[in-house]
Image (cartoon, rainbow, N blue to C red):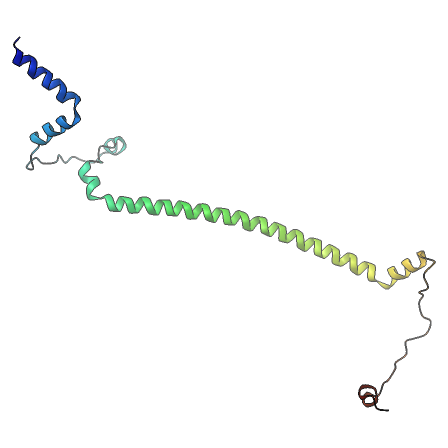
Length: 152
């Protein structure tokens, strides 16, 4: 083998390992007139990802970005809605508990304020000076002119 053959082989090995050199070689081989192979769209191509050619992606990048953005927004709003619904359920439970507690306290107070209960407590406490009156209440009539203005 001659030195030129060795030089050519070494140059080819460096081209194989250098991606820039490969790219330059591909650009030289590809021309504008070359047509993009158009095939039928099959399920195998879709699942394999073959339909995502560089040109197709470049032509439709903004609609794809828009779809991804709206998908992220949709998922985010759904998550937030679920969190709000969980919070509402917790608050409704707390409200229901508070209503039951207020109703229970109100009924206990009403029961303790009845006349029969008050009399029962007064009888149990013998040291109390309070007792039920035997006479009906008196109605005191006050003349309005003399009392309010200080005149007689």
